[in-house]
View (cartoon, rainbow, N blue to C red):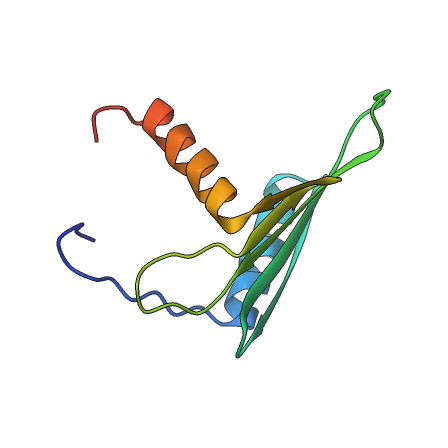
Length: 103
């Protein structure tokens, strides 16, 4: 992949479900589900927490519509916290920049 040219990523619901099943084998407390339609991707991930006063689970949902202009995120929620696509993209961008500052 190269930032100067477009990259097309085509993934089926079956591919994503297989990835979630593999993820669950590596981390038993992590479960995921994805639905792919004409309107895009809707994915949900649940992490079971050990004894914790905040709750038993962390639930993450993400919506990704089809796009010809690169990755677009329509919505993200982490528990009761909801982010717009623009907010989620900003958080993701800053997180990646902190993680990989020299790329």
